[in-house]
Image 1 (cartoon, protein in one colour):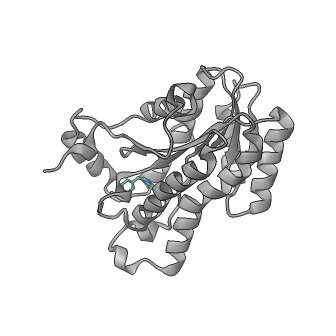
Image 2 (cartoon, protein in one colour):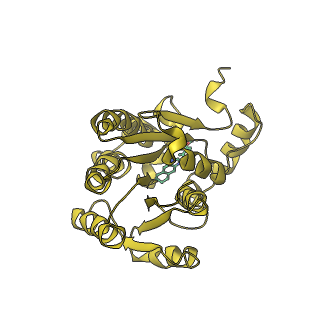
Image 3 (spheres, helix red, strand yellow):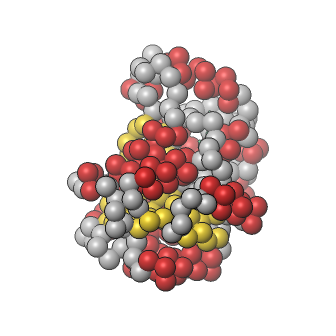
Length: 253
Ligand code: 1JT
């Protein structure tokens, strides 16, 4: 389904990463892929995961370093000469910000969370536009804490609200170039990021009992939805946030 398409994937840290599930789904459909990693520490992980993808391009990209962002897109331009889709699966907040009350969020934690988790979508979209010559599709990852108060999610909820609003504004700006921008609101998944969170095991169990499907979401299912959103099957969908949460968000009491 993605033969002749080139995609850039941001946010692979290890084999459990949502970004990696997206890469596998898209790679299996014939896409050529470029991967970015944040910091030398993660380079080896991405190299090992992609060792059976002979055409994969691997480039460093810390979104707080504009020179690295520019260089990453330059590498893709040099290697492939085009870009059809971009998957943004990046978020960060200091650990202390994801516990206790939102009220005590520091200026530093707030700015860091919003810069890395929300602004980076706009930053990367701007860099992608010149390469998306035949239109394109941009997909980002959100979470229910953007819409409703979720205990401990705190400043990340504010960042995801900004991310979902950014998705809509970018969709409007880029629609005339046939570039679509959508978000996936995934149910919680036991990834490296989630591991740092207190009581994640108990939370996953609680949610599995509450969802209509009576289970948690798998990263593979988020990957398949990302595949749909970057494919032509979703050609009239833009500015949307699609819940991939086993139905959790429809439940009241
Ligand atoms: C980050 C982290 C972003 C964990 C994240 C995240 N988006 C979803 N999760 C999992 C999660 C976390 C909490 C939660 C529910 C789900 C950690 C590093 C920073 C970025 O609260 C109930 C706290």
